[in-house]
Image 1 (cartoon, rainbow, N blue to C red):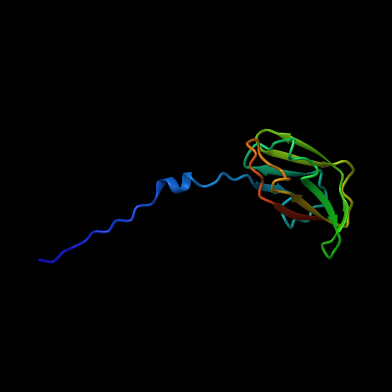
Image 2 (cartoon, rainbow, N blue to C red):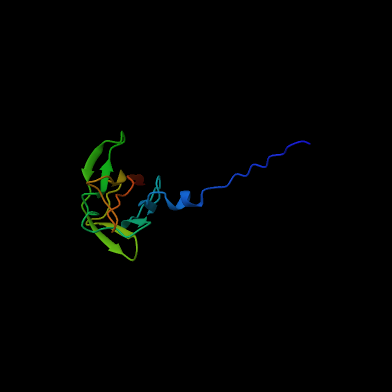
Length: 130
């Protein structure tokens, strides 16, 4: 009489739950690579609530860049948080035309973190104001 073995593969339902929590930028406006003639502010949508003592203009920056990508000058901005995870970086003066702008969010132990202390995943985006 032949023997038959039935193998069953079951996924570990706990695997998804045991993943480390993440904090990251879900979206940015202006979009990465956008060319916009009128930018009032950079708006970031985060997947959690930022700790405003760690998510500051030092860890969430807007800088102007030269054509080769090197930093030309820092852009002075006011940072505001609204709702659950909306951050606005409003330039104090209008954006200068003819520049590429880089949006950088620093993560790690000295970077932006959420309300639970989870560091944000580093983020970089660029847009142009012709």
